[in-house]
Image: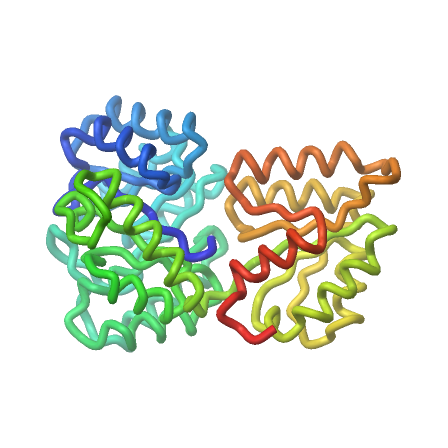
Length: 358
């Protein structure tokens, strides 16, 4: 997740009655991360939303805003039945993870104390940060959903403190209604942000009228803010043996920009990267011939990679060509940038790491 804009088909913490019509406009506007709340529409209509998002190649999100335990657990079960990609919100992570742990959806609960409807984040900032740490330590929690602008204190400070306190991605949600707030969210280190009511109300400066134009405007703002984002990127690196020298040269060229980011590499590539730039953070998978490419594929499928860079040699037949084709297909299916050459890898680096010194 590389600072994604997540459009919520919601207003005042409820899924809007005309969500299906708005979804078609949203897809026309180009957004691919789309969500809705667990209240406002019956299950069958929410299922239709989730199916339409998936058919369009998007990523679906269900956000829990119900406060009582019974409703929250019912919403978690609904997320599984809806087969959404991500479950956002809720406060009972221990109970929810007992339901979600055997399902591929990604779970991002609320840190801190949540009250009211629309939801409000209460308590001193230190308590929110402590809550974030405890949640992030849970194995089946994949990130956090922080109601930053529903907090009455120092919002930029809270966002920075939470993002720096945990290694898992943090999504900012609630009342993000201006370009300035999008920029502040990026600078704090968030992996993404949600907008719902503000987009429906036309709060963002756009080139034209209508909901699709609002979506395009927010996408442009997110793209500009991405260059200022301090969130660590998660980049997969692999190379055919005959292109290892190309990869080594690329890593040397971008070593400074890659510092602080997570590089996920198949076995031999991981060793090469570590030897080339010892200060980089490298997670090594199996060798490609021993299942490493399949491990990368699983990370693509669960949305855990921001880009895949595979230095491929098109002039020689390779035993793993089918694996590369499968990786490329998965990257397209899950809208993950993939680069197969040095020039393309440079473009990915410029897009994801452009705000850093190379």
